[in-house]
Amino acid sequence: MEQLGWGAVAGLAAALPVGVLMATQHMVTAFPGWLVYAAYAVIIGVALGAVARGTKQGLAMTASAGVLLGTLGWLVFSLTLTPLVQGVLPTWSAAAAATTYPQLVGNVLHGALTGLLLHFVAGTWAMKERAKRDPAPRTKVVVVGGGFGGVSAAQRFERLVLRGAKLDVTLVSDSNFLLFTPMLAEVASGALEPAHISAPIRSAAAHTTFLYGRVDRVDPAVREVVLESGEVLKYDHLVLAMGSVPHTFGLPGIAEHAFPLKTLAEAVALRNHVLRMLEAADRETDPRTRRELLTFVVAGAGFAGTETIAELFDLVHGVSHYYPGIAPEEPRFVLVHAGERILPELGPELAEYSMERLQARGIEHRLAMRVTEAAEDLVRLENDELIPTRTFVWTAGNKPVTLLGNGTLVTDSTLRAVGLENVWAVGDCARIPDPLMDGAFYPPTAQHALRQGKAVADNVAAVVAGRSPAEFRFRAIGVLVALGHRTAAAEIRGRRFAGLVAWLMWRGIYLSKLPGVEKRLRVLFDWTLDLVFPRDIVVTSPTPRRSKVRSQ
Image (cartoon, rainbow, N blue to C red; front, top):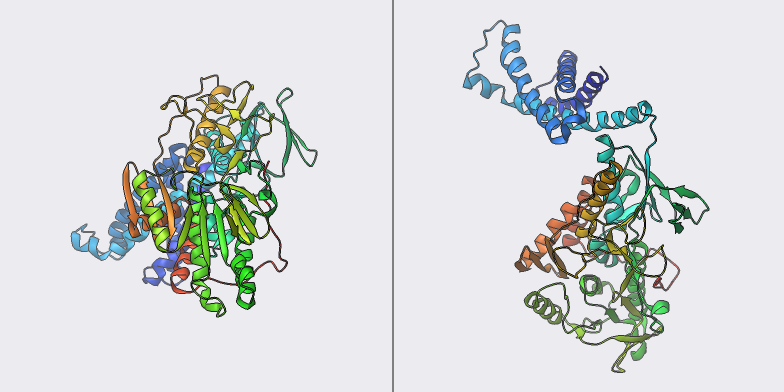
């Protein structure tokens, strides 16, 4: 009976927006029309609750059942009952169907929306009711980390609980949002608003217990996670997904004077700093100081470094008309990389194309060259070349965050941490072997972390149920890199793309991967404005402050 009640609620809730649309088409008019439509919505909702049984059939099946019931409602009400009420025998002819076609569209839309609402509303209710009725102890799972791997694991655990898994899941993170890191460079350049590439964890994993805090230590001997606040979490299974932090290799001055680019705060700090350099250079008369203010150096030519130098170039030249004291040829951009070519993740042809595109725009390269030292106003390379600069971005090294000893956490092919009981790891914080490539490890990318999160949740649930965990296997779909100025390079399933086509692919694919429709619309709106208007030059933090690399 409860399921029928939820069906009636979902039918009425779906009737409001659909009814408004139908009213604009003059299909629902005056009070009697709304009353009849509400009664119809309740009938469809109750029927859907009885037929689809809420979440037991899955989201797609429930929505499909709603579409079928909407079509059936059109046949019964619009083509049959309405003519009878009007004293006319129903003909079910093509002409009659064409006349009532708008009602068909409205009914199908209402049925689909009712199915979606019923799935989520009934699912939430079922989860709570199951917890009340089932006093049996639940296996305690603690997930540490709110990145792609951790949130993906929490979301998968929620689906498993809906299917009957006896799990009590808690996610701990020192940030309360999931950051979409592939777009971080665009935040640093002012192309995107910071909040638009982040989604609150409480909404992304709404049925998971969330704790906002930093983990101090993990004690696997007694199965405890201790937070810096002193709170202690007991666990039966622990999933580590802490990600990585910048690694400076102990080079002098890097930690003190370089800008990292791993968090929203660091991206915003870099943008504000670049704008301050432009403000200062606009009125500076000393030639040496002007060179320092208008030189921008990025170390590391992987995806992050290449996209950062391209975005900084776009930012500086995009707002240069606001600074009449700066000549167009004065800003200097230098990309330093230890390898023989930039973007080692791409094939040689695309890497060469990318470097040529950056060079054509005036971005300098220092290949097969390492940074050995940094100061407030210069960067030293290993050949003793000194580059005067006040803006130095470090993307040349990352290392996993560790909570268990000082060594790198290694897992087996099922994502179990080697040598640790009931401890699992996903994402950048662990070295995960690739069973399809002997001796190789999966790269630390978002597409891998997302799938590792789902796989680790399935494996934990399998072990709890007494089954064997499955081996994690995944082949990368492809790689994309934005080169600025509506240009990109991409390699998808072995096929190469470059230029405007790759740039459109980059934006389309990453837009589709953003968490939630709201964030996608906001980012799309930001991109649209960026095509029409120059980027904002408002400095949002009034106190000049050098960001520091958090190397651990």
